Amino acid sequence: EWRGPSGWQAKGRIGNVDPARLHSQLAPLPLSGPLQASGDRGALAFEVDLSAAAGADRSTGLALRHLQTRGRWAGGEMDLRHLLVRSDDARLQGQLRLVPATRFGQGSLTLEAPGLRADAVGSLSQARGGGTLRLDTPQLAQALAWVRTLPGLAGRAIPELSGQAHLALDWQGGWGDPHLRAQLQVPRLAAPAADGATPWTLRRGALTVDGRLSAADLQS
Image (tube, rainbow, N blue to C red; front, side, top):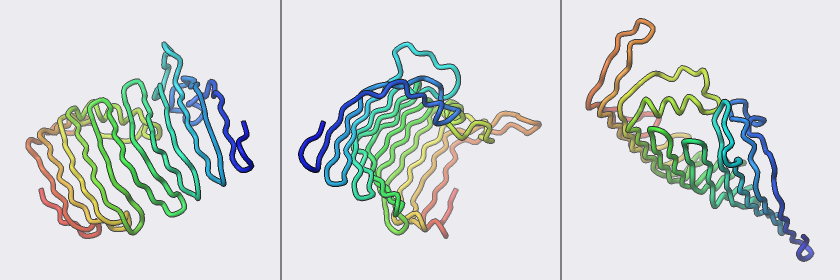
């Protein structure tokens, strides 16, 4: 559907998009749903809402159940005003603004997954930035088991650990050499006996980082 001399609008439906074709560690659960797009003077606005069929069973891999996004691309900048990704057992939601040419990013994201919750708000580029990250893992073993299912991490040497950990991180400055202020609280951390190693348990541990990344002060 055309509107005006320079603008256009289109509506349609995407059917049976197989995530496994994008990455072999994603479950082959086809996603379908409506798509809307419009353009005007070089800018592209879009809205996508894809879901797996109700009752569809996963076979292997991470099962994506729902992908919903609304955003705009203009002048080399991607503005995702709404982003929601849901799998069988996890949910990522937030907003993002990205400028690939300058490697700039800004936004807020919340991740809820088995054994963990993460909240990040801020901006980051090479020379400037600032924000916060909060990570809570009340069930560390469950969280690490979920991390191992993520695309690209299968077969990686992720340790077998159990316990709880809480991270509070603030940063100021760009990713080149930001000023970090972080506190890691570990009420309990344990590793089982594996490959002949001696099992161990840490209780009431704490780690504090304060300073530039290149020369931060580390205290335990």
